[in-house]
Image (tube, rainbow over all chains, first blue to last red; front, side, top):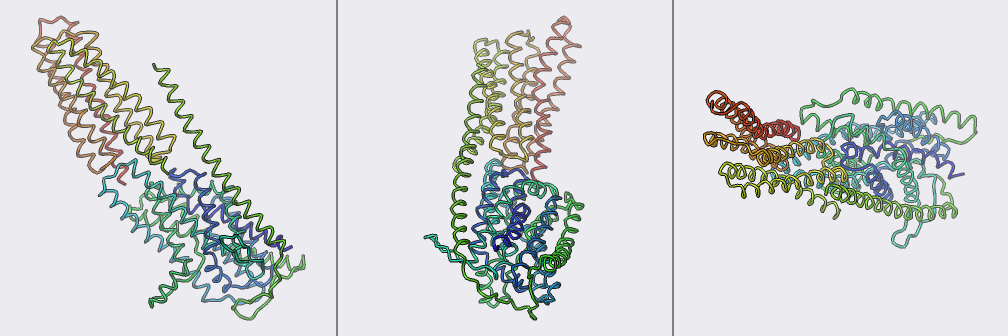
Amino acid sequence: MIILFLSSGLLLGWSLGANDAANVFGSAVGSKMVSFRQAAIISSIFVIIGSVVQGTGASDTLGRLGAVNAIGGSFTVALAAAIVVFMMTKFALPVSTTQAIVGAIIGWNLFTGNPTDATTLTNILSTWVSGPVLGAVFAVILYILLKTVKRKSAIHLVRFESYIRTGLIIVGAFGAYSLGANNIANVMGVFVPAFNLHPLDLKLLTLSSQQQLFLLGSLAIAAGIITYSRRVMEQVGNNIMELSSESALVVVLSQALVLFIFSSSGLSAFLRNAGLPAIPMVPVSSTQVMIGSIIGIGLYSGARNINFRILGEIAAGWILTPLIAGILTFFSLFFVKNIFGIHVGSKTGGAVPVELPATSPDPRVSEIMQYLILCLIFVGLITALIYYLLDRKKRIELKKSEEKFWKNMK
Amino acid sequence: MALFTRTTKDLILKIDEFFDNIDLGLLVFREGIKTYLAGDKESFDRHVQKVELLENNADRLQRSIENEMVTHSILPRHRGEVSSMIDLLDEIIDTIKSSITEFSIESPDIPASLHDRCISIMEASVSAGEELIPAARAYFKAPHTVREKLLKVYYFESETDTLIKDTIKFIFHDMNELDLAKKAHLRYIIHHIGNISDNAQKAADMLSTMAIKIMM
């Protein structure tokens, strides 16, 4: 039953993969510097690593916004957010999963009569503004730096582009890691209080219950990336502004930095120790940061080639996403509670997250997790092998065709 | 990644080799015409063979460069333009080959009084091509210097046009000892030498736009 409830979170994870991975590799794929296949494989691997290793920080913030204290509520909240994200993705609009889940949690708060923590909400909303602004600032600085280095080094264009391509792959991997670390909270955050699994010993590392949950969520994200993100990636890369290869690198890097900053508890602690204001651990919308970065570069280079109509459509999506998610959650909770008779949560009288009574770890679920991890390693190895063989085949065919051509010429 | 670095190195070498071929082709053409006018048949034939070899090599390199760019998805944003530029540069060596072959097959009888004029036209036309090569190389390394390098191409192209016009006028107005067929033949040969600078100008126009685009 618990796996069934989890399905809505997995659907949301799939939607996030289909939609938000485009923010990491969209500009690289759109500028044709990285193939979709490469982008999908790299982002899948690093989203999983980021989610498992560093995913805990941002999920606490969502817990403070609204502690969904029943598995039926978690299911409905995640489902409503997933439906909204899926619909927006269907129309190839780069929608924010963060906004969908925030809207859905507020919908749950309204339905159950729980107050929405104003401080946390302000924190989250402020990142909706500071995220893109920071993205734009980083993008402009990095863009100027890159242009200066290019000009001063007199590097050959072909070599420069090859460095950019390598950079895009490395930075894209970092971006995917940050996306996983920051956004896994959107996917699995609402389930954390209701889930309890045996720690999973993999000899090299041991995964806690929460990490196993995040691993499952990140697998769903990877599935979304591989199966459905292509169209959005191409849309992101081309429609807002035509991106050069160096702009693509700058956009991915600035976005990865912003996401990393808002999910790194180490950096936050360092700033606090240095007497500076700590950075809130908030799931930031990668979509907004990416668009902020693109606009930053666009404005720096004269804003002649920014497609403002598409920007307008995206901005409308930003307002509509939390609104629709909130309304949909409210009505869904009503149906789930009154028609199916499932408990969706209760009023807690405060914004402090309520710990659910600890359920005993389910050995069957833990066993499933073990099999999933083995499958993941197996699929990863097979994919890498297929990729290598396809590439090798392509090179051999080219060599043969060239030899044949010159043989015919003689 | 190692494979990719090797591909990049190979491609850079091939592009450089392609430019070297055009540059050498222009040099050999210059020397070839001089030996033809000096009446050194043996040396001229050697130059014709060299030009043919360089042209074949340039064709092979052109195909290989375009193939590698497509297969390894190199310069995705500029690939079309780079290919067109290489096409235009290849047309220069094609023109050189067809022009020197005309000299070899048709053996035009060029009066001694026209030798200096022919050499001037050839020098100006070849110089336009030669000045194009550093600009084309600069596109890959320092695009902001391309336009200033192209100024010389435009200068030599216009110089070639003026010299051709004066020479043809001289042939048709002042060389009454030549019959019309010979005059027409000379005009044809001279125009063909001038085609080198015309092709250089076409490539220069394209390079100029490409340099602006890449700097944006």
